[in-house]
Length: 130
Image (cartoon, rainbow, N blue to C red; front, side, top):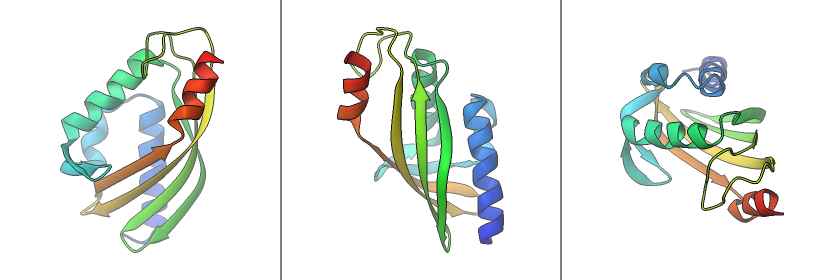
């Protein structure tokens, strides 16, 4: 995929993610992938995403930067939301969060085959309990 194709692909992925359209994720995520270096299936990833959105119904990812290197892309995103159920070990308090996420992906045959995401979990918990 060209950089332009990867950009379009990633923006479509984020649109589906922000719309919480998990049933269409087979268009973006390979059946077998890795998540943060560990083997995973698409169903494993979707279970995590569904659990996150169940606890944080307004969970939103906003793209800030997108960089390319061959079949890899790196994104800097701002994640926001307000948990309504216990999430990441924190009971809901009505507090919202805004954190930066750094994500790196590898795309093969038009789907993610490697996905890595990093955010400051301590800062997230601080905002939710602060």
